[in-house]
Length: 234
Image (cartoon, rainbow, N blue to C red; front, side, top):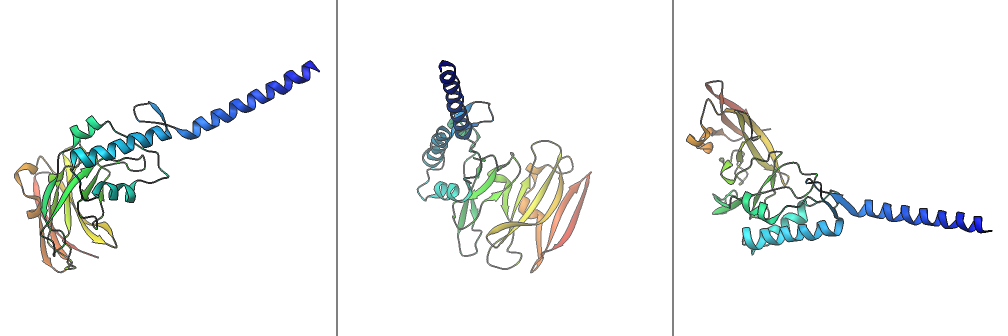
């Protein structure tokens, strides 16, 4: 009889232990630094990041941050949080551009770090909430690296370009995008060898020339040579 009770108690103990272990595994996530937070703790830190971006960095009274997270923070991806001090250190401010839409006077762009593990790179974001973010796979994005081109396809919305860098190597690129079906679609890219051309001594928008509707030239710098390439939009 006593042996039967011991067996039953042992089984119950193991069952309860496994349930608690499974529950912890479901509710806990490991960050890049190796520190483990429960899911509700990650959410709390993420909310702190959002509030800090809104109130301290962007002085956002237009709902830009809330709009960004509602669109791009996936419920199926593990949350990636940051120290607010790191967000402050890496934030380079905003940049005022001529209006991307032809009926607007200007636009404001800033760079956002990823806040989940599905995004592997930074994004260019706009105060105009009708413009989607321009997501990249680079961690070397800067507001000054985004520039406006002409309205090449004459749809009332200017094409945009970025000076793209992977943070290392002498070889960078210019990448040109057009807004299609609510997303930025890459329509052209060129080589940019920084030993051939110092990027600080050139205006990026001057390296994209509209020839006619849907056709433009894009400048390449590579191995000491400068070459213009003609590109037709599809």
